[in-house]
Image 1 (tube, rainbow, N blue to C red):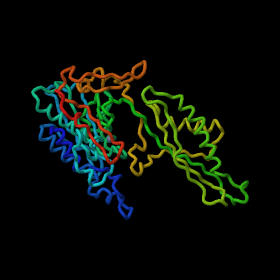
Image 2: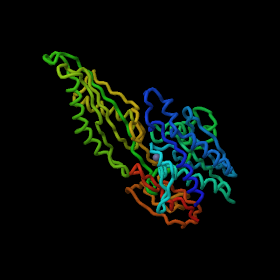
Image 3: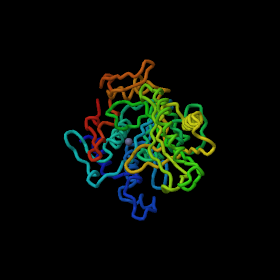
Image 4: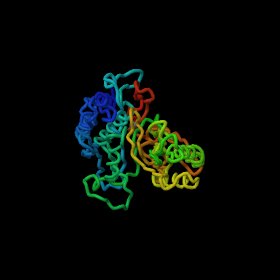
Length: 410
Ligand SMILES: [Zn+2]
């Protein structure tokens, strides 16, 4: 068993279920009670990784994000001046699971268990590689490598948001807003790898997700005299129709070479009290998947402009953006911007000294469209495979990591 496999097995055996996904306590009071569930929270894994990294001589610190929930940051510093920073940023939390899924099982070259590929496999591969590099004869001369094990990716991404605020992605030249230690220490990363399960494809773009709530307010009246009221459901019905037709058609024309088109979905609707009352309120929630460059404010403006142009909304119209909590086993972000590595589209591929050595397929955006390129493993004499994310989580009961992807390539 390789060191990486052993580490992955140990990580699977340490439950780190996102507190949002453990069964709710009987008295629905409590965040407190949820986080006290024996499987809940990233702390066990974060503490374990911190001592693992410290033993290998890495610089380790915690970034407190919420009570009992901290990102763990481990850094390999170059002997010389830091000229660039590479960020490895997998997450420590998992979705929920039954007890048996915290017992790692090997079968047919795969290691099974909750979190195996999403993303404890990447955690194990990245951190083992970093520790080996720390003890190797030659380490990168001017490149700092930062491993950031993040909390809460599966729910509200408070871990990555805290890391970004602490400046890992701060653009060069921008002044720091605060002076915490991380902020002072971390440089802008030229390359970041998150290690999500993508079957070893380098994915450089991601749609954003914006959940909006739209409300109409009318005037109540008796159902026998509807002409005396103003029906909020009728007004909402016109809005829904406009979203389904005009707005969706407009979005279909907006196309990104990697992500396809922007979309809109009306997901919920509620309104009215009973049949014989003219409803004075109606609300819908919509899920708008955004493309890089689209902003929350822009989306809100264009929806309002469309409804105004169609003379659907008047002064009673209210539109609110809310970070609606993800529910059940959904792992999608409630609200998150689209991402596209457009500033350095080549960093992960043509110039990518880590990934190129891993021999992974990378998809990238070029002026002429999407290009897929396969780098040959070993062509550049690479020493460690940093590529994470083999495996699949399509069947919740059978999350696995292909062990082949964990072997060092020499
Ligand atoms: Zn994930």
